[in-house]
Length: 311
Image 1: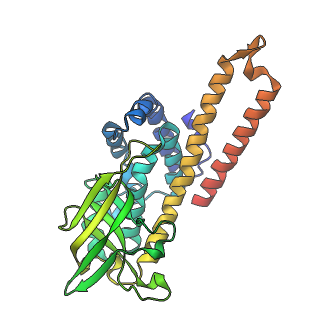
Image 2 (image 1 turned 90 degrees about the vertical axis):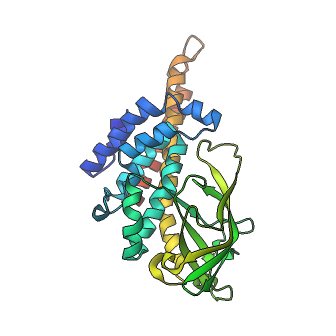
Image 3 (image 1 turned 30 degrees about the horizontal axis):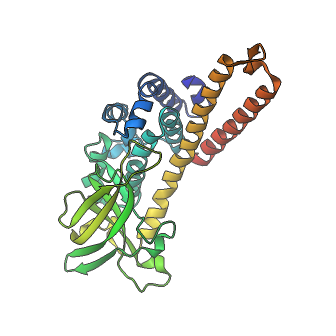
C-alpha cells in the first residue's frame, strides 16, 4: 500500500524515498507501535532506522552533508511515519525545523558548527517557546536574555518541550528588550547547547496520548551563553526566525493528521471486511460503503492539499 500513498508525490526521487519509508513503516513500525505507545517508551531502534534512512538530514543543505530534499518529500515522509505511529513524526519535527532555522538564518559559523552534526544525527534539536504563562501568544514570553560583555545571561522557564531530555541543541526564544513596541522586536533566538551551566531539563510531563516522545520542562537559571549563539548574530529577529521555522513544523503536523487518518481508514476497511451482520460482511451494506467512501474522499482531499501546501 505504501507505493499507492507515494503515487501523489510529483518528484520521482521524493516518490521513491516516500515509498521506501512506507515499506519500512509496514515492516518495522506497525508491528511494534502499540507496544511502544502503551509503555510510553522512547523507540530507540525505530529512531536508529530513521537515521539510517537519512531522514534527520532531509532538509539540511548538501553543502553540510544533508539530503536537501523538497518540502513535498518531507510531507510525504511524515505522512508515512504517522501512518505507522504518530510519535515518530513528532521526534523528527523539531529537529528538522531547528535545522531549517539554522540553515536559513544562522551565521556561517553557526551553520558549520551545527548542521553537519544534525545529519546523522550526532546531536538532535529541540525548540523552546511555550512557558507557564505564554502558549499560543508567543510574544508574551517572560524568559529574558541580558547582555553581559561578550555573553548573555538567560533566566526563565519553558514548558512542553518535545525532545527536551534528548536534544543536544535547543533553539530558545527569549526577550532581550522587555519594553519593545511592538513586542516581537524585543525577541531574540539563541542556540543553547545541552550541558550549558545554568540550563537544565526538568520533569517529564505526562500526556494522555502522543506517547514515546518525551515532553519536558526546561529552566534557565543565570545561564551564560556567548553572544555568538544568537541565531543570525543580531538581536530582535528571533520572533521572525522562529515563526518561519514553525511553518516547516506545520507541514509536519498537517502530514501527521493525514497519516493518522489513513491508518484509521485502513483499520476500518479491514474491520468492515471481517465483521458480519445480517448474514454478510458489513462492507457489503450500502450504508457502510457510503460512510467509508466519504472517509477516503476527505482523506484524499487532505493528502492533496497538504502536498500542495508543501510544494
